[in-house]
Length: 92
Image 1 (cartoon, rainbow, N blue to C red):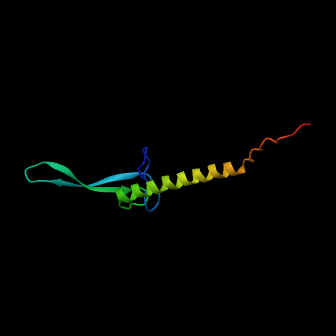
Image 2 (tube, rainbow, N blue to C red):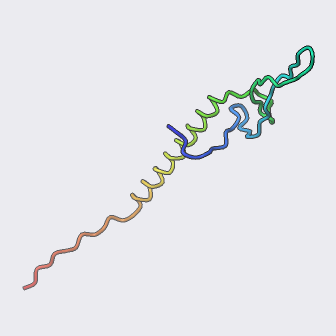
């Protein structure tokens, strides 16, 4: 399933949604520094994030939302009274 809109990802451990980009600072002899990326960390629980897993869980949440929406539609349809068929009367 593909997400059709931007979805806020959540931490797989605590469901937090604020993350910090983590990196090593590296330098070389003679000058110059740069960042060497490590990944992302949840600000709430400090767990390292697995982007693939977070995206999969977001897709599952979206599928569950769609299923719930379909269930509500079916319940609403079954709650409506069936239309009455017109009665045929014979006059004499």
